[in-house]
Structure formats: C-alpha cells, structure tokens
Image (cartoon, rainbow, N blue to C red; front, side):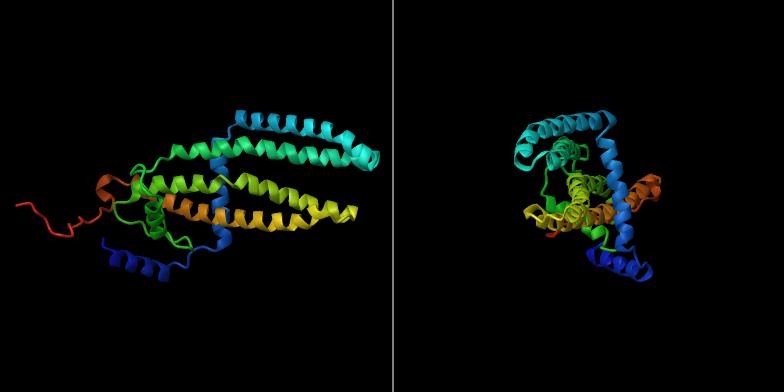
Length: 243
C-alpha cells in the first residue's frame, strides 16, 4: 500500500465514520490509563507508597505544629498542621508511584530497537486521527500493538501527580472561601487547577486514541496469518541490482 492509498483509505473512513467525541476519547483513555496504573502499582506497592506518605505527613505535622502554635495560636495551628501534613504526605506518596510508572515503560520496548522517537510518532499518528478513526497500515499490526502500548504507558506517567493537584485544588478553593483569608497560595490554586486539568484532559485523549489503535492491532493479530493484511513489497529507489 502506497502513501496515496493510505491517504485515500483514511479519507473514505472519515466520510463514513464520524469518529468519537473528545469526551468519549477521554473516557476510553482514562480507563486504559487506570488499567495500566493498576497493573504497575500493585497492592504491595500501594501500601508502600501510603506508608511512606503517612510517615512523611505525620512527621511534617508534628514538626510544624509548634511553630504554627507560637505564630497563630492553638485555634488554627492544629488545622494548618494537618493540612500541611496531608499535602506533604500525598506529595511523598506520589514520588515512588511516578518512578514505578516511568520504569514500567520498558515493559513495552520499541519493536525496532533504539530508533528515533519520531518514527513511532509518524507511525501512530498516521494510523489514527484526532477523532479516533483507525486506519491500520497493512503489515504494521505487530509494531503498532507494541508502540501504542508504549504510548499509553508514557502518557500515564504524569496522571497521578496531575490528579493529586486537581484534588487539592478542589478542596483548597472551598476551604479558603470558608476561612475568608486570601493569601498568595489562594491565588495560585486556580492556576494549579487549570494546568492540571488541562494535563489530565490532553493525556487522556492521547491514551484514548492509542487504546483504540491498540485494540485494532490486537484484532488484526488475532486473525489467522493467512487472513492478515500484508504490506506490498517496496521497490528500491535506484532499482534492483540482482541479475
């Protein structure tokens, strides 16, 4: 199949298939990312992360409480210490989770080895469009199945941290509204909320497109070898030198 044939196939698919909305792609990507996180961050690792976060949070709350008590009094010192301890503990718990997700990308090594990343991007972007319409190139199912899984793993690395910032922002905005004190941190919370929400949205859309591409490649590989599409032979640019 030549480049013109692939482009024509994608145009025909775009006319017949309206594709999926962004919300649907986000839902598909969120499920794929959650499944990958659950596979990597096992129950034992979750307990380890929670233990590290709890220890760091309790230590921070105990250390900062005397300082806040002398500065603000007993009324607000306890609540501020607990809030700061929760923030530090959650941040500490996210660190090993991010490390485990980053190292787990190696589970899906690139098919062609240590080649430039732009070749992966060209293959994947050419096989699925922004609306989730898949046009799998003939003979590329095996490589696409591996590269799409690697792309899902790569897009999932930053999701736990972004989700944590969104959660704290959603909790912090009502808390500051009830207290009535607007400080520097209060003005920065909406910025964290917008940036983290944009990260979650974009990464889930990417994971959703890659999940659809992965499923299409798996369906192609599930067929008998005689029924799979085969790429047409590529002619050498300068002709064959064989007799």
